[in-house]
Length: 366
Image (cartoon, rainbow, N blue to C red; front, side, top):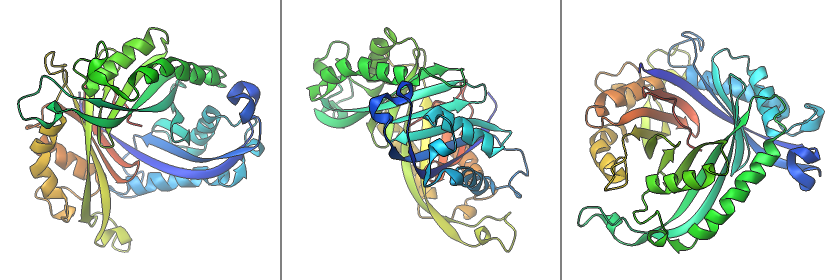
């Protein structure tokens, strides 16, 4: 598959609302408020931002301008029924962005919705459980062979449909909670190795077990994401496994293509989030696609070349904008990590560039 570049942005707004009974239950009918987060992912035409390399900041500003009328407002004065999907529709229309691919609204840390250009909506809910495990089939001396524990998080993504009012959102959210409850009871404060089907409880195997349990009673399930730690985890959609691991970079840069009067032409810097996504067949003995530790070790020399360095001085780089750095990372790492199929580089949380070349659309990490 050819390379594809998407740009992403995130913007918050503080708002109050009241929802009809069908949209959020009895409590939601009372006046209440949220710290909302809006997100957008878009394929941008060359020159859209004024100069190559300015896309991330331009998209962020476009999204911030679009949600500004919602900030510190009663949303019922703007939308007749301000449920999450209605807000996402409103934001998508106000963006006036031909290349947008996904627009999302998060109304709580563990709940949100994403819309695509075809009008399809995906509802997601995030759940947490605390558990112990060990991986019995790893090589001798591997730290994961010892009994240890994690605060695992599971995100269930479910297809809501194409109808514009998406009146089934409340029912689907309640169904997600209902099907998760018995899983939580079994997984929380447990040793995962003792659970049938999790004798080898890798992130991939946990995602597989959750998929099978949930999808059997909820066919709208689209994929399962398991966070083993804050910076690594796995996906499963019933057919394909994938993992990701994330590092932070404290790096400097100047944009060579920025106009001379633009402050981005000066030396400045970011604490970047760099996320590597990898896909591979499941190893039937080890129960994983790729070892998180192996990925970090192999990627180590590339990380050291980026961290605490000026990115515009990297050998062979076009410029130090997020897209160019992501392409440079692929060129350096792809041969050593052939399973790599997507690189996310965020200048600030949720705002940056996504380079993908895998055979399927990239899954979201919420």
